[in-house]
Image 1 (cartoon, rainbow, N blue to C red):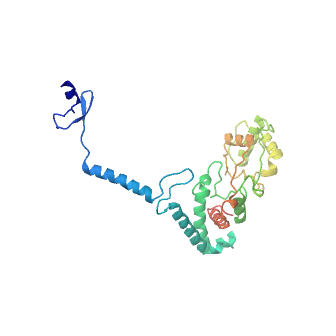
Image 2 (image 1 turned 180 degrees about the horizontal axis):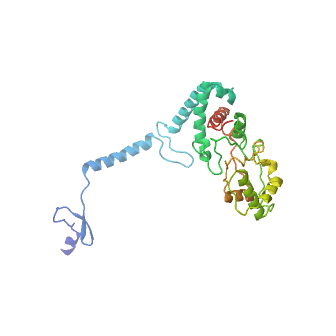
Image 3 (image 1 turned 135 degrees about the vertical axis):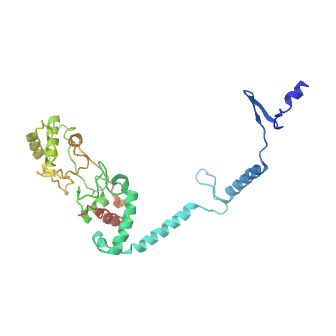
Length: 295
């Protein structure tokens, strides 16, 4: 009798529904049956999933996936859409293939197409470093101003985009090498400080009260003027920046200048000639030239 009572389900006296038989701190859980409509949907979902597995690609295999009885694959649709888009662009930019960037910019129709295509290509490939609007950041050139390390003409910009800057494996890449005057022991700490102060002097910026400007001028003439020029106005043929226009890629404060002189800077830009088609390169050239700083 006791065993029979023990095996019998416990009935909740308030609802008349059996409980699960478990008790937690005097609390029992009702064993309420699931609604029939819910069970119907649940079993229908199982049947639907089985049907989906049969009809569509679903299960991964070792080297492939199940194809499904209809053989559908969204990748094929994407490939078709991309091919259609490429064909549309080819028709729109038919005249760009044989035109130079200068000719494209002079033709209102081609210029409009190039600006649209160049903006899209810039956003996909260049904005990560130069910013969406080309304003750049510390270590990444601002393309909106008229200060160019390697020249801002259409031809110069196209050359830079095609072959990059210090791009490994490209024989025509832009290359310049500033010595690491501190790291390589070419200048002492006080000499580096003197040169940094002189650079600020050239740019019309305040110098430190006890700066040895005379020493800085001499060291600059001996070590820096061959690339930057005696007046510090730079040389686009060598990628040597202008030091007197208060536009600086890495900063004109004393800490940044000291770091630059001590350890040098060697920024890298990819060579896009092997990654983008010639028409896209031309569109990018026109777009960058039109951002505001083109020469």
